[in-house]
Length: 319
Image (cartoon, rainbow, N blue to C red):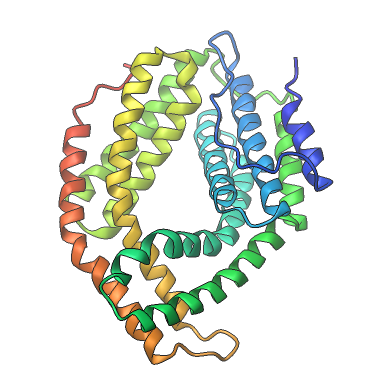
């Protein structure tokens, strides 16, 4: 029986009614009796449900968690399209994935500023000049307002509407895609493919360079999403243990990503916006923030690499 959730929620969102609370990802409803393309469609269905439900929260008003979960949904959708698209050898799915990345990028500035103002600015502000940091916060709130306007325009725009319609159409399609009808075999290949990418990134991450560690974090995130998609096919206990350790490693690497958030946000500040240049107090506070995080980077990178070495010994649940 077809799953009515994506179409129903999508219809409600188009009419500006329906769920107005942030929605996290839910376990994928797949089983070993499914064909691979049916498992793929079920995965897309769950991604679409999360995506459209959280879009409703942004249509209803500013929701920090709703925006975060919407970007999570788009990233999960990207991973599903890439992972299954490679397996099925369906290059046309790359078009949908590219559109998901574009939509996510339009939401990025608002999310970056949310993280900066609610999480990253506080610690260094305790050590800096109060008036300078007040000026910086005021300026960043202005930029945040513009970014949120862009996010609202994104979820209410034609591109978002057409994208959700195309994904919903794919969910309910019956296109033959899989070359191998055995879902268990396909699932293992998908997981092994993501694992190989992680190992390649991990070897390069030994350099300790920020870019290499960032790419390792992204590869781990893709592995985690793929593991969560396919979790119902395996032992709950083994999956839970593996994903828990994977999340722990991601959190360590996420601390490094905070530095990238700061750099991106500072770049927003230094650019001229409507002819308004940063004031000396704002520049001073921005420099303190950048320096505060930069000074902590070596220790964070060292701890992340130690955690990575321990994670390499964890036995995958699909072997």
